[in-house]
Structure formats: C-alpha cells, structure tokens
Image (cartoon, rainbow, N blue to C red; front, side):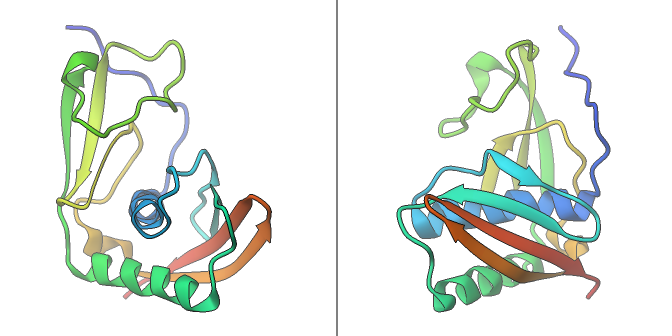
Length: 152
C-alpha cells in the first residue's frame, strides 16, 4: 500500500483540533464552507470564513459557547486510513495538494466532525482547554475570527 503524505509543519495539537471544531461549528451555524485561510499558532490563531453577512454579537457569543460545550463533552479524536474511493460521504478533498497520495488519513472528532487531515491532534477534546474569541472583523465577504485557548 502507498505511503501516507509527509507533513511539513508542526502544529500545536490543541489549537489545531480546535480549528477542526470551529470549522464544523461555522458550517453548521452559517452554512458556509470550512475555512481555506487560517493561521494556527500556539498563542493565538486566526481563521477566515466566506459569509453573506457578518454574524451578530449574539451569534459570535453562541459560536464561543458551542465550542466550549463541545470541548467539555470530551469527544474522542480518532483516525483511519482510507483510499480516495473509501473517503466518507461529505468529506471534501478540495484542500488537498495536487500531489497528495492515494492513501488519506481521515480525522474524526466524535460524531461531530470528520475531515481529511495529516496534522497533529489531541486524543480528546477536553485536552483543548477553554476556547475564547478575542476579536472578529468583517471585510465582505470575509469574516475573520481571532481566538486563543486557555488551560481549564
């Protein structure tokens, strides 16, 4: 069987796993696509979404509330290796590089999120810590969220 893709960067697993949860939360709340533009770092991260309108303050607070609720649920993070033909329904491969291998790693966070990813993740969401949105900005159609994590 073909080898899995090599990875060229070292993520901070709690922050990278939070990115997965945030992507799925934004998809569910706003019907947008997962982010294609993010900068994920240990101290703070920023991530952009394409939206039709800027979220209200109440919606932004709800994103933060839902994220912390998911983290507290202690959802398991698991992996499976699949070929392109075995990719689960709903998992998009549009962010993969052109030279991606035939063998892909699928990351699942409980029953909440599933996507193809070769990055580093925690074993369960409780390891993420508290999620806090520190700022947001709107530059139509881009909505940016800046966030950080604090140990629980």
